[in-house]
Image (cartoon, rainbow over all chains, first blue to last red):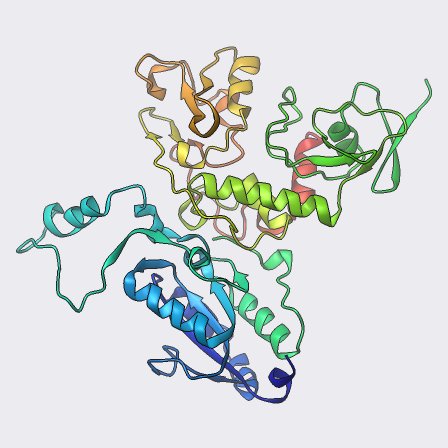
Length: 184
Length: 237
């Protein structure tokens, strides 16, 4: 962790099968973001609009679980490039609300959404080659790559982000206090 | 009568010879994590969260009678790591989606996980297909969240005198069933005033029309650490 102490920490973030709520909660650290930016620099992230990770990234924050093939390749790119990979929020940790489709066959999900649901105009199941293929089940990220830290919550509160990042900036092992642990 | 004593984590406490280790601990204000134990019902000993070390051997605190001179270990790193793994297994075995659950904030499984510092589910999720029974006008049965603690089975049989609930199947196939030919809750004798309707530690048995009555921040376990809240309940408050 010594280079983390002397250089700015490079952080990358992404939202996979998530709602961006975790990113919004991250921004809820409000003016502390200025303090944060004295110590960190953002790599690939919706905050920077950088599309691919740089060579040496210290921390990757992953919001959302895995619902399609693109999620899996993005997650693997993160794991390949970051030192510390963090599962952020309920969906990254256990699949979350998207995983509530898991006991319904994928075909039935698609038919319900695009063919038979009320108010559908020209029913068809989208099949453009640009669209990533859906997985049969939504998966939490620890089932595909090794995850180093978990920040639970839907979303994790701004305080959880701040605790984790300040611990990291100070070179301490991140420790989320019990009062900040929430699954909702 | 001579006061009998045992120690928990090195602290001496006295007990009544009819008490289990769990009861002696609760009476002395010592929290031992548990889910299937409830002071109003016969011990069941199935969830194993209350596993302690008694004179060097693992035992369930809720079923083992307290005895003179026992040296009980409770709040140790080893035991709490075992308890965390048990809790994680309960989470992955069912469908526990806290953000969308009516009982979130009032749930003993969730609060127990908080108390143990559980941050992730560790194991691969099963995502089982479980039944939801909304047939009863006042009571909802969502087996996605059932942890098979049998508190409803015991409450309905021993307190309500109705035996509405039972466990069928074995091993991975174990599941909660209701006493009705149709298999529907509405065809059983259960009423909303029954103890069995209110004893579920998770969100498997819910009273309809009461969801989300308390906003986030005012729910049972929002600010009370699980230890304090559960001890209060166990001591009858």
